[in-house]
Image (cartoon, rainbow, N blue to C red):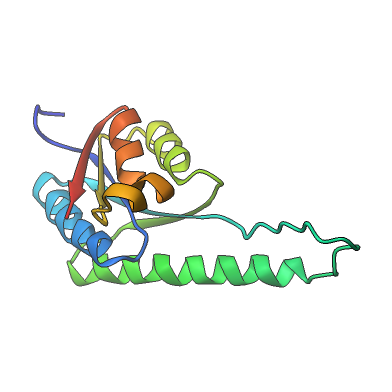
Length: 150
């Protein structure tokens, strides 16, 4: 691999407008460098907490899991379609994890990715403190180059 080129590009995709911008940038880079492109969407299964005085009511947790997976697949399919519209075929991966940052980083490292491209929602202040930032976590801990698109 020549310096300043990429052979494996990963796009962390959450379906947001900034993630769509990241897809456009990543597909352009993949075309320019002849790189493979992998689109990753990370989702978490719903968690249940109950602190009531009596027994917890029975819930159909399987239907909640199925719904979460189905919504995650829809998001991933929108990303795949965006890649196709840009003229680049992308491999799509749906990952289930409790930590989005960790899932992206582990997937990238195991796959030998040399560039991670992702959008940012640009949170600041108290909102960022409460919700954290996936892009900050990836930039801070990635083993490879990271391009954050806004």
